[in-house]
Length: 125
Image (cartoon, rainbow, N blue to C red; front, side, top):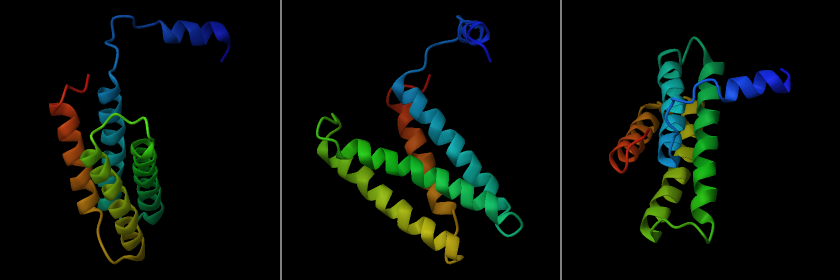
């Protein structure tokens, strides 16, 4: 793509609402959770899809853990600790899923709960 096409694409829909940070977080969780749900149904027939979905979910939670570990993070300490713990749980549980010792259901439940919180606490626009 050349610069002109990129510029036209960037300004093509000025009426579209600007996403908030919370809305962007919600959208990322929604995409990753959707892939987890799809992969859960194909666990045995499409293992690579499951691996990719788990990788994306792990990457999301690692990013969150790094963010809450930063000294300038403004979230309350208790919430930061909970998010960090959820990352640790997600990493460990994902390993169990890959070994065939667990299902992705609890990971989907955790992400869905986070999405509900993001939607409730200020709207995901």
